[in-house]
Image (tube, rainbow, N blue to C red; front, side, top):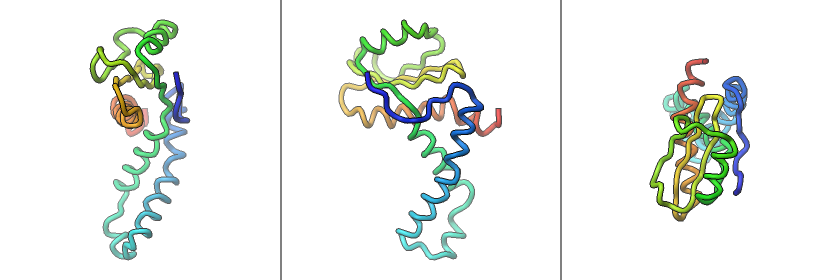
Length: 144
């Protein structure tokens, strides 16, 4: 089993702190991307609003979520060792595929997992977007 990523919040407060740290990075990424695209300042001011920065922050946060990558046996062993309730698990993909990537967010009573045969990078990216949308987005935006 392999672990990737850095954000592994154990509470919504910890998630919020990590999400907040992504805000300044999002502003820099958007500004530097616009500069690399030679976007004129007036067009930047017209097109880049708080929604653009927020989208960048969401993407940065999601891309840094800690995930585990392993085969089906490692995943099943982890589920048993961590005593994950069936109702807490969201499994995307087929149960008959050999490999699994998962994110543990049990502070929200959630473990989100995705199966894959090949292409672990694509599976990790898909899982992170899904984990963000299913677990974090509403909680972070609601100030829960």
